[in-house]
Image 1 (cartoon, rainbow, N blue to C red):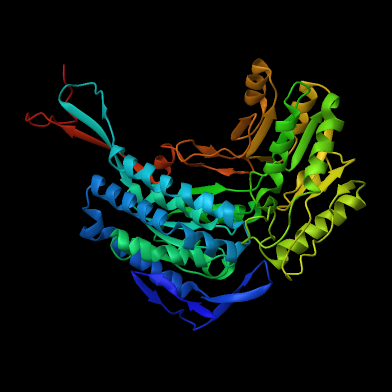
Image 2 (cartoon, rainbow, N blue to C red):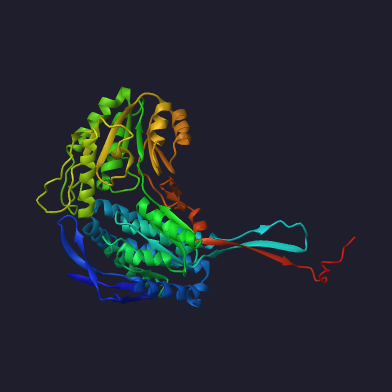
Length: 492
């Protein structure tokens, strides 16, 4: 198998312990490469390199416009190498190649957007009480950023962190998921070709307790950005809080997808399918709790079950495949356990509920639809992160709002209705950082994303994220040349 080292200070560096671990192709269940098993020693080296790069004139003194040009060049290179990056990501996490091609086609936009924002980061002059006092603010980079990224969309979710971090003038150390290191490592030659100085972007591969925890705890890391589970996010927040380090967390979700009686039922059914079965349900914004108003319950449920039964499960590299495998064996076992719990608690499976036999030997699970569930059940409250949806009826708008908000999460929500006034009412009433109306999973680098409640802290995307990667300094200057007065002599 091919073996990958860490990428530190512009060089490929073997792990300090000499240990590597295998990454498995989820479509076949077979290992296909080895990655360096990072430890605190490797993280220390990477953070030191990032700190040196942050202080070096080659990066520190680069104009904001010049930083933007580097980001634009990186975005262009990603576009040129989209096919190989997409294929690598499919082999690593099992997402459909056609989906990854579309994702990679849009990925340059993140770097282009923040390239344009790089020289729009500035402070302002504050009105003072005296004409002799000049008070202005500066927005400065925070320093070394630790970016810990997940396995479901490694390149996209890394781009949402490093593009604004670099635009603001920071340096970064990335710790990708141990399940999906290959595409991030494949990005590093493009970072070099774009012209970023060595040490500005570094990658240490490995496991969370060994490499991730060391990155979060390193005293030279000035900011941590994490996407992943709520449990791990809580641990990172506690670690960062103990040393007053700012943290951005994009965590779990149990998002409601809501259909009212007046909706276009055909579009709503397709929105439900896309919201929970795309990417095999392995997305934090999955619309995994579906609420159907009583008048359209049978029709929409029937449409969803009918389409779920025809979804083509198989090799994610093939154009005709519509549902690939889940990313690794542990995730498959987790999905199976939640389906078992759902049945034991009284839920009824009307489609799926079993592994899918594709003959490939990988981690495939059928698209699964539960009915007869109560919103208080575990499968309605806990994030499954798989192709499993619960469908529940409701009668009134007030009842729906209570049901939709009855969760510890608040990441996203979908509303399907032709009533514009209702859409606005619900958008205001739902406890979710993103609300879609008559669509689902729409996304843009220009639009901010945030999580409410246990779905996270801070903002990603948009210009608001630049505040996450800068610190604000207030400067006061006395322009008067008159001698300073004795502070203990009273003036009339």
